[in-house]
Length: 284
Ligand code: PMP
Image 1: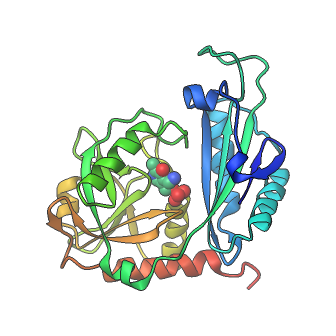
Image 2: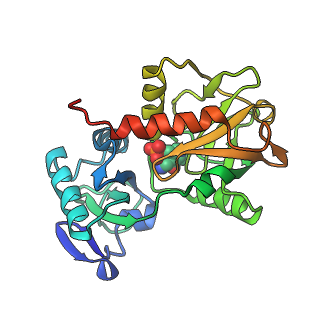
């Protein structure tokens, strides 16, 4: 495997950054995960838009122009012969003597790696996944795709120890913000597709955005509003979205089966709509 680190393509096992990189010391950086199907990056521009926005919110300069970032990502994919999986991009504020305030001279550090994975099997999809709920203890700027993910790691670990695949994070008012690494959706008991509005309390998922576009293009209605854990327990269907899960059916929330305890029909239709939407040839 080959990684890109600050201007060089290096064997993955030797890829390293300096111990005084502010990413290592302060989690002072941001990242993106871009899905790859059929050797193609999915929604690359939307991911680069979000990267640019995250960086500007933290006042870190773009390490390279968008065009150069695209050239590097294509080269990392080519060198690894990536066909299905994802590309990881990380930008930190760079190397400087440890001090909380922004360094004057640091140069942003850029890392790109890829991982080959396998598409979910139909057995996995038919089984669906379980989620647990846990308090959302994160900061107030969850719209920034920061590499500071300790609360997310704690929540995910709690889920795994409870035999679940994801944790839904719950605000003080009882509404679900999002998953530890995914956006949360339900189909209410009366059949409405609901997901939270992308404000500063959640990450604006690119999968979420494309699914909304795909659903609109198919003439489907949806509501952008918070929903409570109680509403989710009573929901007909539930699912999550992310670059690595695409659209994944949820069959149990805490101890409560969702609907009849099997993946929902609308969820599976949305999964297919999403895949068709992002893999459609833009020229046709
Ligand atoms: N919320 C959080 C907290 C995440 O970490 C992620 C995935 N990085 C998402 C939502 C989903 O975003 P995307 O669809 O862009 O992968």
